[in-house]
Image 1: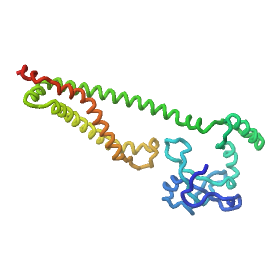
Image 2 (image 1 turned 45 degrees about the vertical axis):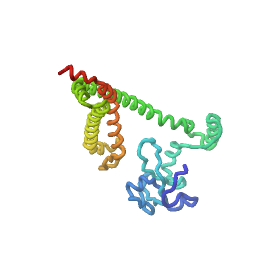
Image 3 (image 1 turned 60 degrees about the vertical axis):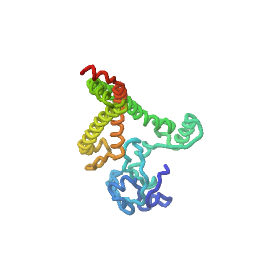
Length: 279
């Protein structure tokens, strides 16, 4: 699969059935269990009916997301084909995945490939074939749907927040119409009134952002305990990026200011005579 070598060496033609057993491990496995010093260490693999057998690690390769693209990389161990234990041959035969680069039509190539496969092993089972594009689409399809659904709910939530904040600020402005008229009667400009309303809305947004960040910090230990769901190691803490926190807070404040913009413009057009009439 052209997996990139990180440390050590790859397999060679000399790694055969009568030579010392060797293995490659993924960087994730080396970092988690071998403190990054995997070369030369031995593992016991239990791939047969007789008991674990020792193998020596001769190389570390980059991580591969072969289960799902959005899950943490697997803890992989690779051994040469010529050093597979006889008890594992049937499992390997029944779980082969072939990746072939070809310019032919996939349907035509499938027939040719199966013809040659049957010539070697008439009993070989084939579960299905397809292009890499189809494989990726099948893998990412449900996640794209979930992401779209999440985006729709998030957009609806933002819209409801805008409507709610707009109504709240509009009501507050209507209740202060006489006060605003009095301010303008004694010299306040439309810009002064508009900035006053926006500053008060910004304070509301800052308070909400601070409360949200405090809540995120409070639930962080709970998220850290959900190891199977997050892919974290046991006891590993969830770290919230300062950039993400700042962007989220800025977005919340921006939403509040957007909701307050129209009421602030309307408040800036309040006639000073309203205050005089009230008096």
